[in-house]
View (cartoon, rainbow, N blue to C red):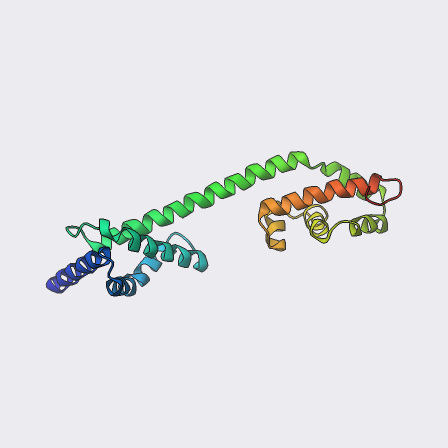
Length: 192
């Protein structure tokens, strides 16, 4: 059994050296052999199957690109595991940074939007008047304003519902509120 494992590990090292020389058939064999294992490792970090698959592809792309750096005195499986862990951790860090950035942008936008004016508008005007004013907005802004301020969704929820990035949803809602304010304060009730 130990001898079989030793032969297998030697074979894997030889395949990695061949991949480093640009051998596509060797890469196909490495991919076939290690893909299920790499996928299992990535799924330890990410529950999302689509994201996990994307990272698995990134791992094998990197493996192809840097295979010439493989040291055959080391284990191929350990080298592939290191690449996988690095890719997964990089993606985790990027996800955290994206979330933190969205929170910072959301806090900034929160200061720019005067939510009190929307609430005052709702209390002063009846639903018919508000509906008329909302119909003057472009559909993208109207949908964002309704979801964000009337339904009460968060920025990320609004973005998900509209199928756009959070920042885009927040910008549409902010621009819609500003346009709504102009319509509602205009003497003729139309956008200036």
